[in-house]
Image 1: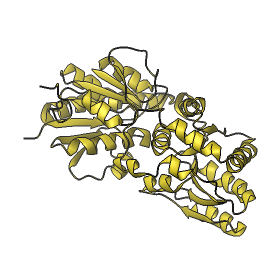
Image 2 (image 1 turned 180 degrees about the vertical axis):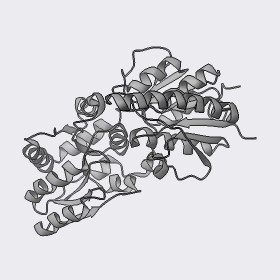
Image 3 (image 1 turned 30 degrees about the vertical axis):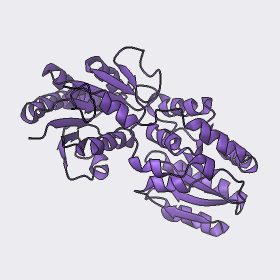
Image 4 (image 1 turned 60 degrees about the vertical axis):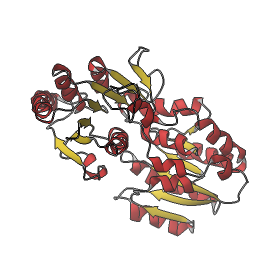
Length: 363
């Protein structure tokens, strides 16, 4: 019978997307994957492989909630812990790999008490509250950014697992080798904060006339509004509500305007594309600004903050990047080495419970 592995991820794409990428990698090598999530989580849309078995916990957040929701969260935490004990007892995973979020804590504690190895992946530059707890119980904690956790033998810099298809994207030295009169501009705000992008960016972009071809991912609510703004201006813009082929859009793009969630900045660096990052104001612990700052310090991106000067600053950044297109090549080249190249391999090779297909030292 195939050995079973628990993947624990729910909540935002920053947890679920890297978890899904590593799950697909593992399942190719004849392991079973049991995914622990929630019935309402985004994993139900992202996890498409029928070989991955989804199981659910009743879980909800505690931090920053009012009294009622804090009590509810504590109750769900206790209930999820006992559910996790039952799941582990019945399915006997060889290890648990959690990607943060409140759902991961009861599973990590249950696994630790049942002597099942716990591995943790933190995607952001500032560790979330859940992973600060999970790190106590983990055998190894993988971090995407350097210095997220205090240095120790069990902290491994891995980066974020990225889809294999990103390796097929046109290299930066080809993409940016010649100056062009029209550049391809990809715009997306993500699941959180897309509305600010939809209401502010088209009006700014319109000032450039036909200097940019635009693909703007709006989400479902504002698609018609944004389409109308671009159509009225006569700009070359394709407006879509969602894409399942974001790697192809990265390949097409010359400049990306986006939020600075961990997966987004990891994909930008893997694709080696120039970017203008707009950190989401209400991200926990302001981690999106910290993520963006890591790229800016490496001269791999520009930061434009969401404030009253947003349109002015965005216009200035785009003008500079259009007029001095050598900046695009420099930014893209600088982005290449900010994260490890093959994050999935680093994670899999550091889990000794996996067999020699991943780790030649494993029994």
